[in-house]
Length: 302
Ligand code: ATP
Image 1 (cartoon, rainbow, N blue to C red):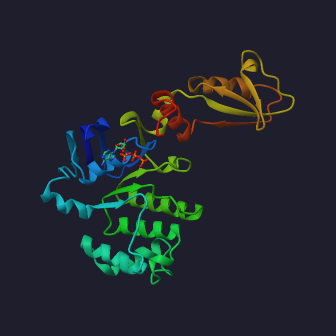
Image 2: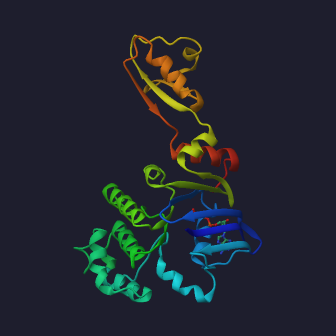
Image 3: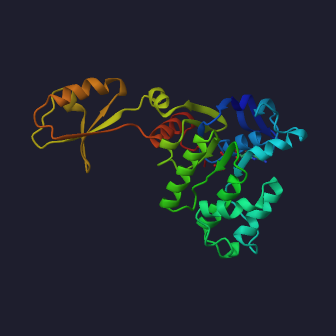
């Protein structure tokens, strides 16, 4: 089932093009990472899916409906949204804030204490939000987004302010929600650690789609090399490998095109003197940097 479908969706704000014609299909249980530099069009894409703004041209469908139609209000109960730089009424307690949002969403307020416990705010639930740290406010934002067991979750910078353990807990929660059939769009500038939790990445640059696909597909498209880290004092490489060997503080490294990875691995494994070998594939960060640098130029996002 298509949960989100964008067909040639374009957004122009008072003459400023924010999003150039974009196609996107998201199916039930998929987790999409939406990445791009500042001003690339991520928030615009999220707002179009939430129905907060209309497309200048093209068609947006969420659960098969136009999210901007006034009779699409029932859709909002299926949606969870965490906005960037979340802020709440400081004088209320965490529990009161969550109960307030539960009432707005038509969700039973009895679910709130359990939800706060899930995000690690059980003990702080009766403290005023003004006493919360930045990470605690972010956790409260997550609890708000998770109210009513949403079928589509849109999360803008969800791990900002979270400590490493809370970040891990957050991603495990995303995994659980995915298992339950929830579809997730995750926008982030913090790329390390995200890649194992997303099914697909979509990279935007200056309002344009730069790349879209699974990490394996993007690695193929970008054609960045794998890095072989070699260990062995007595190791001597034959030409032409020897000419490609680089020496750094991390030891000896060989940049290997992905298409040659297996052939070179076989060649190396037969060499005397090779004591150990680690293979590092291009990371999501490497792929992201490659697309932004090659297609947007050095000033992207400045
Ligand atoms: P960031 O990572 O900084 O949050 P983003 O990728 O979310 O950036 P958008 O907020 O979608 O970027 O903005 C895309 C472009 O549209 C930018 O050039 C921005 O200045 C412009 N823009 C966004 N909202 C408006 C608006 N209401 N009026 C005019 N221009 C806007």
